[in-house]
Length: 323
Image (cartoon, rainbow, N blue to C red; front, side, top):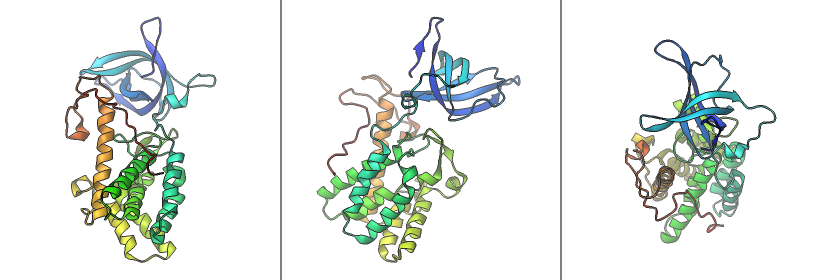
């Protein structure tokens, strides 16, 4: 993380509070249980003997001073001093909030141009109606709370990654309906803007009540149904799109309402899993030196991962080929 060493042996810097909870020790004293983060990463932190009475909250940007210590073999920040930011503080928001290297607005425009060229008028009308109505949130939302693409603009980055893989897959397998697959790819996670609650900095704070109860797969299908009804579209196209959205998690254990039942739905599910997995692997191995193993990654079957050092671990996608 971007800390600066100071003469007394401590470090200091500006961070964003991704988690902020008041808790009690066994003897009844209050402490803050935090996760602090900047664009370089995150770590747990503790502020003992807290008497601030709700001064700090999630998503707040603060200046902290303290020491990085080891707890159960992992880094943890012990806070000596903490305060909210104030006028005159010299910090850059882009250095605190992890974000995609390509902005969400640019990625949205790239997707929009693709849909504008569709020959299938029904797919074109439904997709454009939905994404145009959701644009404000789509361009800044993360794709997840904690896992893959949980960064500002991550939803558009994840979506565009799948669209590019879809386009290349269609070149290898010409029998795939490109416009149907790309439409499903664009809409598969569109309801995450409804499922997740994002803070002012653009990172997810948690799930909405409705998101917990219904989820983005079902709500995404509802978006398609509503858009088609308003557009007067009643063909099987609507059902195909809905099926792709509610089945893209592959199996019921991972939240799919049904398993994918036609080619484009199966391909979408595989590409979605592939992109999420590649992101998770790169994110984990980027934290260790070449020749070293990561900690166990619970999101990847609790496996340790090896950084062989033969390629970059940074997650980067070639978005140019389909333009």
